[in-house]
Length: 230
Image (cartoon, rainbow, N blue to C red; front, side):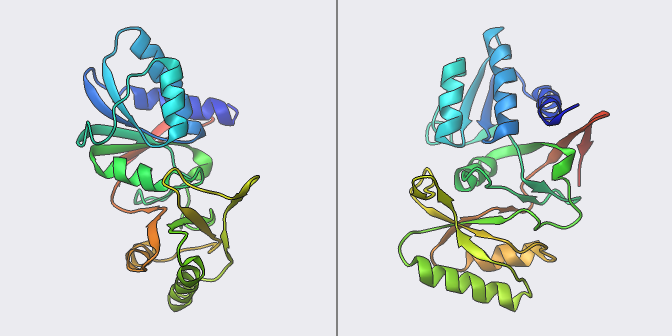
């Protein structure tokens, strides 16, 4: 299996958890998009779902493929969210936000009774942090916020650069109009402590550590897919 085939396999297994009539949070990213394509086939065949997308990009794909959508205000309580991850550890703690949708992804996931993660085996890690941790921040006071994050990292024994994410057109802007700091910590021994401390920094809107949110993960590899639980 190549990388895309593994993503499709994980998405296909996740689709078995989707029941007729569900209110469904729909994630963002390359693996989530494979799920959207498979879900669209089921919808075309008669499956009834109402989807809440976690990004404008996902919304466009769903609409193009005929998946009915609602806003989270219209459906504030969801049955299930299915989304990808940039890293997942044995306790189902995640790093998310490589695509820049972490704020909406976390809001939607936390509005759901369950969150299922779909990923290929390269995303499974012993300790979070090799993937740059996205930290969504308000543009106002950017420098002050970055300094506060740097001081926090130093207190927790974390090192590595913290840079504003850029795009071809300048600084990367999220769907909510925020900026992202990408923190190259390399290794985060205490993800729970970092999560709590980041939440206390004014200017930090949200961060990509998803702690105690995922219910299970479907991990695909060359030999097929397996289910990870806590």
